[in-house]
Length: 299
Image (cartoon, rainbow, N blue to C red):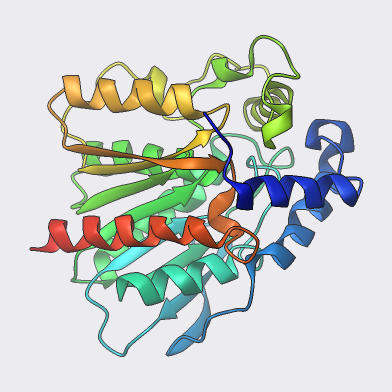
């Protein structure tokens, strides 16, 4: 596996800035580090409309941001941002959501779910599920769930909720999803040279699950035994990523259960490339895979 020159240049840039492993920063500084990474996203694309809104839950309001590239989008994508359930937010995901809306001609609904450790599992997933149920009742068109990294894990969990609650879901789009807490076991430095280590994942999973590190309920999709009947999936993995192995195992598990699944491995890419098109322009190819998957599911 050879790292793509664009991805290596990004890693070199981080090193020149003195970036430290997220696990060494703690929650507050990790959030700040992820927030500043938006500078690598490049210029924000123009879209037809952006609307900030809220979804009312029984005891709180969940902020969302809606993106449209045209007045008549062909579907809705419920999007969950990455950041290890600890960091990231709607603002950090803004450039990626704009690009996704333009590439797909879908309405993208980005969710400001509660973060850990202040709100551990199932809180973040409950927020995402509440938005899913609300959108299902208010929108008559096709619906996809999507997310990257931890957000990809949440999107995968939503696919199970949709199946179990008979919510019609046209597809799930998972970008290098975090779906197995066991990936955090082993050498904590493994993967550090490519931007995400097992130690980082241990930090994230510990904050998300607390003492329940083996996963429970919908928390860890790869550990759920029955994966039959899930919505068709597009899984995009980074070739040089500590999460690639669990992504590949999930692809096999879905296929063995008779689920429709497409797996795209982004050659030479590292974890997190979807947020950083400005520094890794070749990573934009994943938008083509996403738009083709959506068009296929809608045809």
